[in-house]
Length: 225
Image (cartoon, rainbow, N blue to C red; front, top):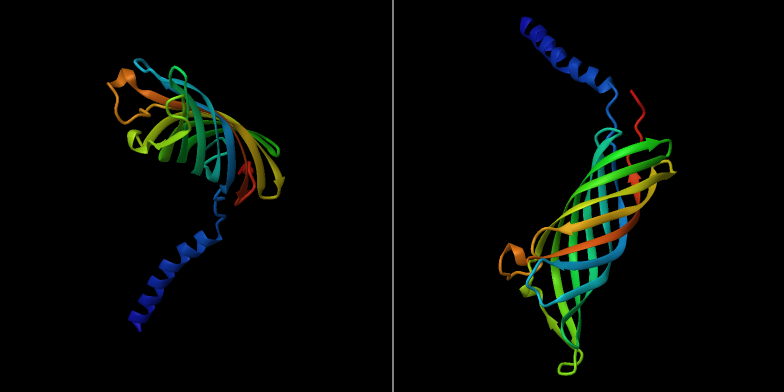
């Protein structure tokens, strides 16, 4: 009998704290997921010692995004996007070429948010990780008209960049936000696999608009406790 009473007391001691915690209100997850479309201008900056004259080109792409807000002010933004880009290049006199790239890009940004009602202004800054999956060069000259060559093997496939920008969000439905903004990227790693040292690095940079939709797991801004 004593053993049965002791067992009941132990079970009650284990059950009651969990039951009390279950009755307590749980914090909102404040997680969002959705999709993004992006497009803008891109080019390559060669430090010194290059005979290539890189001009402006364009980029376009889209993918998925994920956000987690820790407070009404701070959070993180990440995701995965496919990027298509084309950049003009003039490697010599009377030679015109275009470099076409296919890439996958994953951002990791800090969000600093200012909120008012259904509107939010987000300052974004952080890192970009880009993997170049394919690159080809199409040239046109008197000696080699309309020739295309694969050049992926001559490039550094993994690119690491710094990013900064902003976006505006506003609630269009109970748990749905529409957003648009601008991001500038500068990739600090060398675009070319073979180079003559740090001073001869070539760097990708771009400025792009973005727009998309986020689906939230709870209302944002979160109500003050």
